Length: 83
Image (cartoon, rainbow, N blue to C red; front, side, top):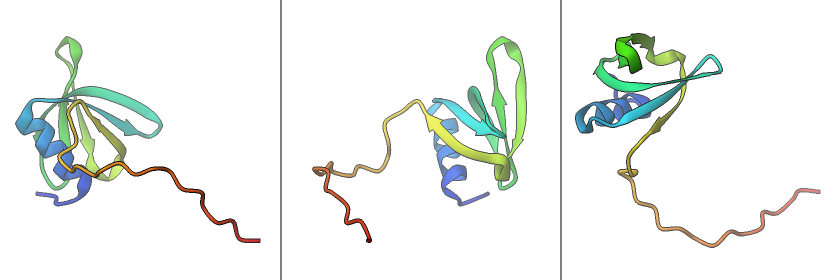
């Protein structure tokens, strides 16, 4: 089992039955995770289709659930500009 951030997010989405969106080669793919291992993910899609996607092809993951990591919000600060 992959212990990457992507792998962990997909495993949590599978366990919690949350919808996900995966960014793969510039395209967002939506569905529900039915299986995930250290190499890839099986994504059930609308209409009964499914996709098998390599984890190393996934650029970003959006999970339709609250983040498991709670970070208190802070006011925005100006960043110093080198010059």
